[in-house]
Length: 416
View (cartoon, rainbow, N blue to C red):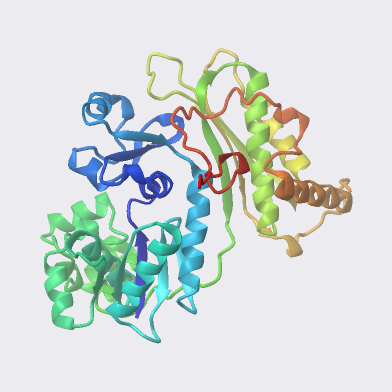
């Protein structure tokens, strides 16, 4: 049996952990540059606030109902996510971290509601984050069970332990809410009369394979209780790593773009070294504001293929800035920039080149020292000069909450 543990309204719940006065009050969290709603408390959902809705469109609603609004605080959310996952690890021998707020837990040794309820209480006690748990034979059914636990149970736990219960539940479960069914697939299924998960489970396998590919067949088998997606207990190596940000204010100057692109490239290099990977391609892109159609639109992209895969910050930044220089146009105003490192290979399997002139051993030592200092003293304490110091291009975060668990200056004080 597999259990899916999912944090309830995770970002909003993280804000409530350190501000208990927000309990039972509407809370929303906004995306980068305080643009759109990406998390809502149940109270905010009842007010009609939709996921992905631009903040400026609901300004009157926010003011009328005193909705508490926060900018994304990824340092806080990431740390609390680690604490939740570490709590799960104390209760199960195997688990798969599926996302920042979801994990599949191995319940093959003992599967019952009491165990799930105990885990739910433990996470609430240790981290303050509320969760719901769905239990079933497969990941797809566990997703369905979790959805039912969140929407239709008081305990926050639901288990598929009988075939009749599975059939009755799937018979009223909308096909568009199934894991892996997107908008286009849902429309195609409904056009042929498949509206529920049960109807999909009983559909012709050959038709499903022809229209939804092999993934559709796996989904159908999972709904029947056949495991097609086993637990992935080892972290897969990322094939591509992208670092991109929208600017707080639009930028035209090349000097500011250099700061942003070099910072993004350095972040990609640091992530590569953390995974012990090297990249074979480096891409850089720019974008104007697509929401200003009256302004000149320009979305350039440049890719470099390396002779020798690398995770060296100096080398990756060098190529990123070279690409920036080639695609930059002074007659455009830019809203976003990013760097992508791709075709990664293990650090221990890098194929060298006879004509390589870089002293890679020396670079490796320099990067190791810089990473060690930044891990001990704080992010970007040591960085390249081209990254600048002003960060005038940084995200707009006007409603950012303190980093309660990752910054000494933001630690809560207890007055006795």
